[in-house]
Amino acid sequence: MEHLQGGSDARDWIDLLIEARRESSLTVCDIVFAEIAPLFPSLEKLNSTLESLGVEYDPIHPQRAFAAGEIFRRYRREGGLRKYLIPDFLIGAHALHQAGCLAARDRGYLRRYFPQLRILSTQSP
Figure 1 (cartoon, one colour):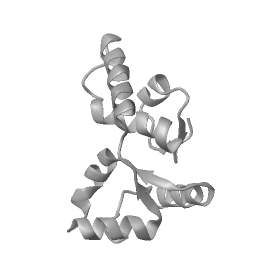
Figure 2 (cartoon, one colour):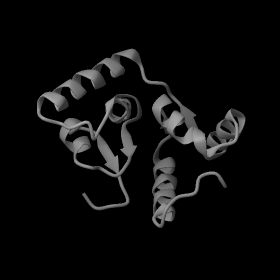
Figure 3 (cartoon, one colour):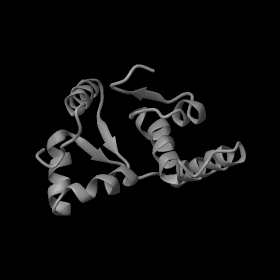
């Protein structure tokens, strides 16, 4: 846990995840796993921390990765800038189809391109 330090709202996010864990299991896809990896000194420490938190590793299925690419193509055709990249859409597709919800700050594209996705946030929609 000492590796998972955050900003001023870190406690709010921890509380949100604790509540979500009471309702269901927590998962991270391969993209999120890679994003948090630099916070840990070793793979073993990352794995043991996730295990102690009850978080499961669930890689993105090829079908979901393909869907993310299609949604990203639509985003770019509709004038979407390179502000959001394929990893953002991979995480969204994984959350929608493999996890059921996503703990994230919605910066607009999630609700627009994944309208059925339940978004857990410390901020009001």
